[in-house]
Amino acid sequence: MKKLFVIALQMIMVLLLNAQSPAGTWKTIDDATGQAKSYIEITESGGSFNGKVTKLLRADADPNRKCDKCTDSRKGQLILGMTILRNLRKNGAEWKGGKILDPEKGQEYTCSVWFEAGKPDVLQVRGYHWSGLWRTQVWYRVK
Image 1 (cartoon, rainbow, N blue to C red):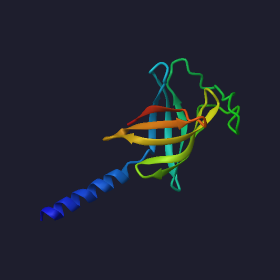
Image 2: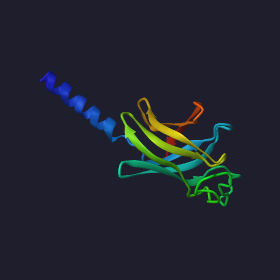
Image 3: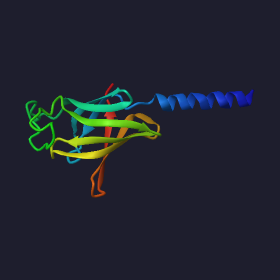
Image 4: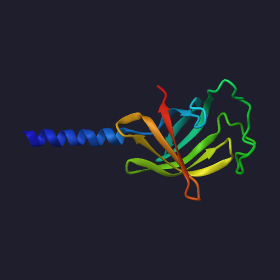
């Protein structure tokens, strides 16, 4: 009976871990000021996760601001509504292989995301530069 309980508990834990998904709305925090910056809505389609800016939170944010520094097809697009996170795919306990755009700098980085241990409402978002440098932000789930 004890073995059956342990097996059932392990199966429940696997299901709970697999049920976690970065899909949802996340609040980003400005690295420089520590203040809330925007909401990013992450959606899943065909196993790929993408995220777009759905709300600007800073009081001085211009909703008509465009990505003038972007160098791809997003150049000149409004930042509000822009897809900044593309093609993340599940890989073990994290999602990898995607790209994330910093619209303030117009630069795109390789990206991976994962949940902070034991906190399904805290997402670690890491952007990697080709030079080997990286930066990690913490995003918080909006309920």
